[in-house]
Image (cartoon, rainbow over all chains, first blue to last red; front, side):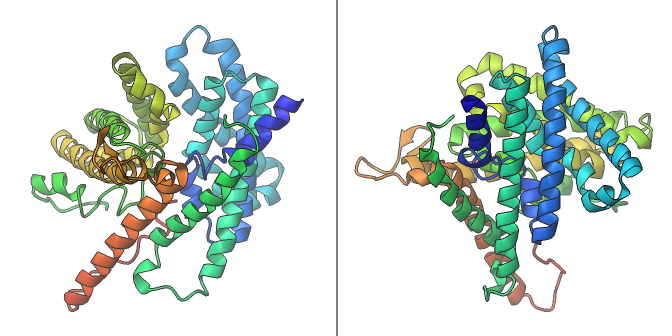
Length: 192
Length: 221
């Protein structure tokens, strides 16, 4: 159990997906304007990540043992179709949730965090349970980074910055500061 | 950028280097730009992989553009890209195992690099093979230049070396933070700020010719 908790905490804060591994930067920069959208994007990500972890386990156990060279292709196809199916299912079953997640679900397909999760958990040889904890941790970490960034950017709108700095450059510098803060967690465990 | 006027072929090549630089202007492909630029060698290896994948898939996509039904075009592009990425991954693993190990999962992550899918959708799927090749090469050069710029700044400041050769003298105290993750954000942020400042100054000098070149906020989605 300790190992599983370690995997979760490590993925969430110590090796935060976005701030330490640079995964999921597109949503991090693209939809971090408002806290509310950031939370929804994060929720959609956690959801898809858990499903991906399941799919990756199935693929790794049954298909890819005999054809390891198909790994990248199999992962991306399965993730893309999974997101598509989930989107259709949610639309049918819970229109309210569909409204909430909205356009974020399809966007997730081309999100490096999802494929990154699949590849990292394969490289580290995670089993089903470990993979699931890794997915939840990674998703939480992504959500945390998104929400933090969105809160900063909401306040940034009121700040008086020079004209030329009102773009992504400043956001990236802020991300650097956040990333620096997250490095403080590195002492919690030995780095993975 | 739908139906474009016939531009001189040279324009397709150089636009990716500066005016439509994939990383600095379009803010695409940031994951690799930040993750593997902690040394110049890694930046070059990553750029070579991206060049291979981008040129390969652009050629293939522009060749088969007429037989791909538009409903399944994105899936087709992704499949083509994934195939080339697999090839690149295997070549790197076989020829330079040390670099492959450093780049780790980020070679595989070229599949979801928005630069590549973006070029297929925006350019290769509606232009001739020759133009697509030029476009792909130009974009790759732009990407490479940015990667090497970042790699140089980070390696020189963070490690005092360039391609492993010491450049800062024996008494240099490295800014270790520059080769760690925060350094990536800080370097790219600074570069973007400097570029935006230069651009703003240029616009102010040429006031009447106001091309609506607003800041690229929000393009990264």
